Structures are given as C-alpha cells and as structure tokens.
Image 1 (cartoon, rainbow, N blue to C red):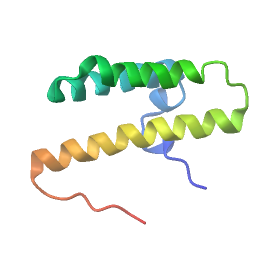
Image 2: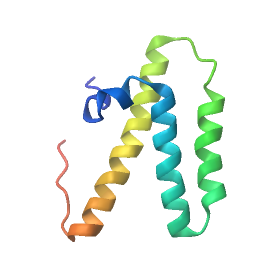
Image 3: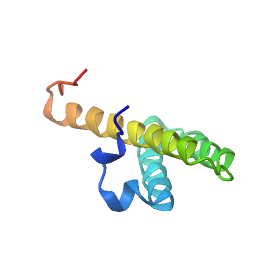
Image 4: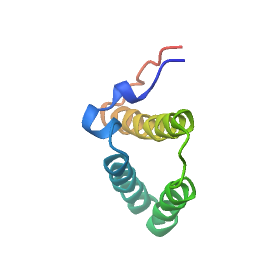
Length: 91
C-alpha cells in the first residue's frame, strides 16, 4: 500500500513531534473558523496521547499516514476554497 507521508515534507513526515505540531496548528485554524477551537485541538491531542506508547512500527506508520491524510485533506479543502476550483483526486 502506498504511503501518504511522501506527500508531506520529509522533516514533517519523519518526525512525530513536528507532525503533532502541524496537526495542532491546523486544528487551531479550523477551530477558529468554526468557533470550537478547544474541541478540535482536544480531539487531536487525545488521539496523539492515546497512541503515544505505541511501539509496533507498522502501527506507527499507519497512524502517521492517517495524520498525513488529515493534513493533506485540509490543505486540499483550503486550496479549493481559495481558487474556487475542485482539486482532482487520483484513485
């Protein structure tokens, strides 16, 4: 299965702390727009804390892919809003 982490800058995809920080930044941005910052940021923190003791490399890789997918989806959404055009997705 192809990895989504390749779509992110290597310094972000290879470092869980940086990935966490970027997820928090996006959560804060979304939360401010929807006036529920504490809820959205709390959800991100909860997911990272829930898996902080994970040691299985495959599971960690999957979790990082999931986080990358969320970041990429948000970036696409914001891009579509700014340009007014739908970004095509590959299947």
